[in-house]
Length: 310
Image 1 (tube, rainbow, N blue to C red):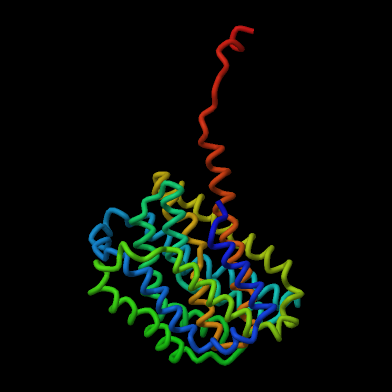
Image 2 (cartoon, rainbow, N blue to C red):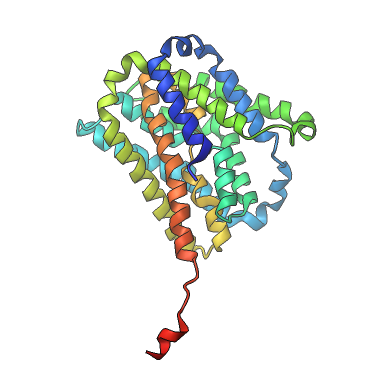
């Protein structure tokens, strides 16, 4: 159940640490790799899903509020508290903020939504909307949260993210029918692996600044994910969402687009990529565990009739 993505990620990190020289030289192609990821994601998107918006409104709005309101506030608040308590340093705090404010990932979210019995159209609507909003929302949040700590070039960030996101979308529209069935989803994971390899390579010489925060980064990632699951579970009950509606947003809402996070990291020091990478590994581990636990809960119990008479 842990599968290809996690293997690619771990392998990318290992070669990034031990063979960093090539990765550093490849840094300029990160925007191209991210644009390719957006292209591969949107080429399978039927934008007619927006016609169904009214029937998907409750789970969609809950997922959107979780992604762009609840998670940014929680991540920032916890990170800011730990920074002021000297439990983390500034690069780690910046990494936490960047992870919080990027949009949702496309490939993994759709896979897990389908695997868990969710309504894929809700997940797709949520993913596409957060990605389309990202050029405006992500720079705005980063400027709001980090302007007192570092210099933030929000206009340039907005322009670069808009180009990286909207150009591939526009290219995909006229040719999606021809390529839709021919492209393997594993290509996306390989591109993510390449982006992570480059990010780790760029920061390898400066890992001393953040490597001592490995344990707290893992604990924070797990805590953030658990808090998000609890938040969504609670409000799913309040809104009386059906099980398939809940499952369509539960895992996707904490699956952050780490490849876009690494694009944002380019505006800061390389070691800022440390927390997004740790979070990405953690988010890949949680869904298989959640899947197995949920499967046990839903498994029908068998009753031995003979025991009823003794």
